[in-house]
Length: 413
Image 1 (cartoon, rainbow, N blue to C red):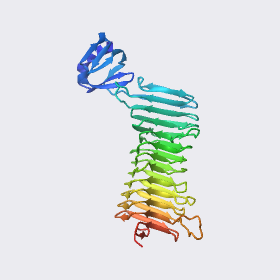
Image 2: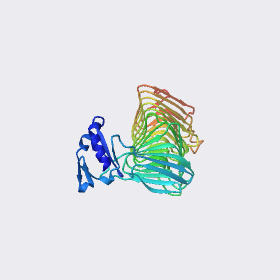
Image 3: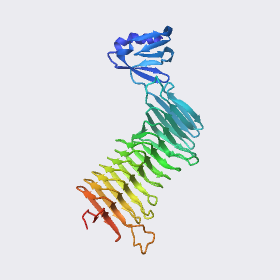
Image 4: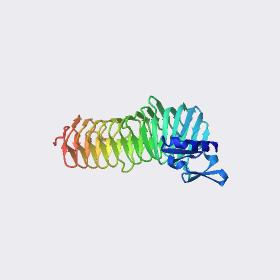
């Protein structure tokens, strides 16, 4: 009660400097315009107070502040153990903290404003994992954390909201999973994944995908590096679209595709660097069931000789190269640097490919078709940029669309 009386005395002064007051409770906080906070009415013999039209139990009010409260949970892992420092006033609860496996959750209530929690994780261990579940947007700050879960996923974020993943500058963060229990990915995000920060994230997957976002996956300006060196599924799999504005992505050792948005998902590359080695027969470096659009950045694709029919970029509808560079080495028989079901339009940027796969079917029974730099069911359209495709076999072709075969510079043969 005393702190509320003190607050009333300060109101006339604070109104000059603040526009919003935050009523902090164990379940979170409510924001109230300062002009309304002063109209406080006590009810039920002083045990309840009405602030800005909302009733609060006086005993539940931790504080009233004028800057947005920081809701932060610190998790530090050691081998087989974890320590948790919870600065959310009870908003986030610990479901489990056993033998280095941590499960945290936070749910919206009728009175608490939906707030964003920052989970800051650090430390390392050979038998550790992190599970987060709740109703709020959140930030997962990876501050030099190494997690290896021999049984299941290393990190699971079961929240359908926007999940910001922050790689602290200069840190290396490493995740590895096990395959005792089936799961979607070594690092699984139910909602929208937005990646930021200039640190490094290394992922080794032993069950399915390396990184999976249930909705879109975005790499923001200033992003650092993702390295995937093993995955029985895809390197990066997302449910809506993959958007890359900056950073570096290196993917190898996958038995699915390198980058794969789900059914009808788009791929948009505005900057950064992607390097994918296709490590399985019929695998794709980048698979887009809908549109592929590249406005900048560098994409480097390698299809080794053992990978029959591998594809560097596989496009379900139409592709557009407006800027940036696509470099591909297609060595496997039947492989394609770019394969599209629709049209591909180049208005700028550079395509540089070397195609040496594809052998005479009479002498090579394992051959599954010609090797092409670009193979389209629709039309090849070039209005700008540079296209240089070198072919080193008589049964390869630089570009073939629905009607015409072109030489390496885009001239019809």
